[in-house]
Image (cartoon, rainbow, N blue to C red; front, side, top):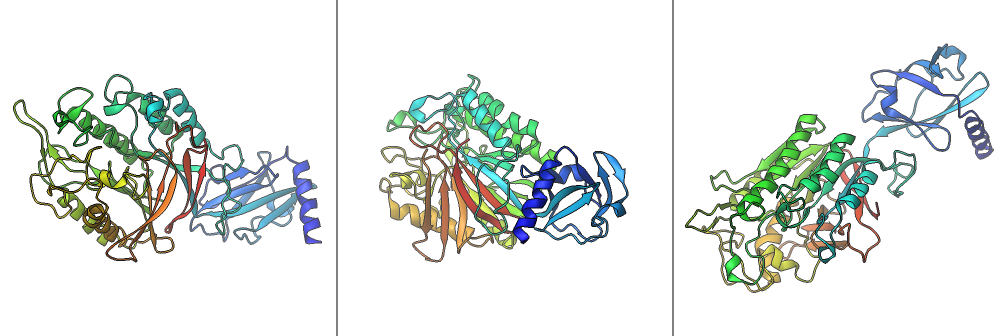
Length: 464
């Protein structure tokens, strides 16, 4: 009987779809929180913590105020509960409303756009990336579900994008996607669209955005070099693009706590500028390329670059995490933890034949240690993965005891858990996102369900 009655009421609402009942809400702007569902009722999504007592203060139908006492039941006196469909009748028409608490939000992760770089790098054209970004920003705005979550309490949620992330390798090498070295084409088809939509977009650098220690097996390309689209100048332009974008969103006031940076505190010249911020009661930790990227001093006319150990940066990260241990955390860097047959050489700063630049000072993380074997799993784990996982484990927001992490670089989807070789309870669940231009996979992004104060709840691959 109850199901029959509900079907009947929804049928009435559908028949009266041309008429609209709206409310004046206590402390909340109705137009910002209410949206007509495709089934005919209106979903009212209220900010977390909204007082439901006395929520509705006035009623209108098709923009004309009506006497609330003439509505059955009276919306200004009836008890509102989250998750309960309320049906109000006026002038022989029924109007359905579902009230929800805004504890959920969605993020979208993509990576390795390689704008205009060509098929050899699974490159994406600026036009295609613009279309992908537009679809991401518009997700759910038409009332349809892009993905369906299975997490309790979110199964009826129509996912809409609250924040977008790109985990590196933005375009052609050193930002030469628009022949200016400034990542202009990438920014135009991603960041500028996000600004216009008012949806925060955060991106980090990958190895194609920073000059690595070596590109190939040749001795001649060791260290950074001059050039408008290469070397130290290109690294500076990458950092400038990232920090300028961050500053824009800081000034937009969209974060609970603005972006701040982890630096060495030394006057090295080039800092990777890893950063953190808090959004909707979730802490995000973002590393440019990866957390052990070495700072360096730029080369002079007659001198080569000088590399330094990342120890001060990692130590500052550790201190910060310890003082924010109660905050749900989400982590990201360009390099995956496990995906890829040569994953460990990335963590050891090695090129395709194992060459790398040692730091000029001592390091607890192997940056000053010569003679590490090519793609050495033991060294990668002992020197970098194990210590980093220990730091990450200090923060809240784990799922099943695992830290939640997102990466790119591999160009393919992967989903694995790294377990520390020192402490088996230190685990990092790493989601590696495929390149949008990778032709061998049908999906090209992660849609991630977050819960305020708790972090990641569900991760789904999808295609935009």
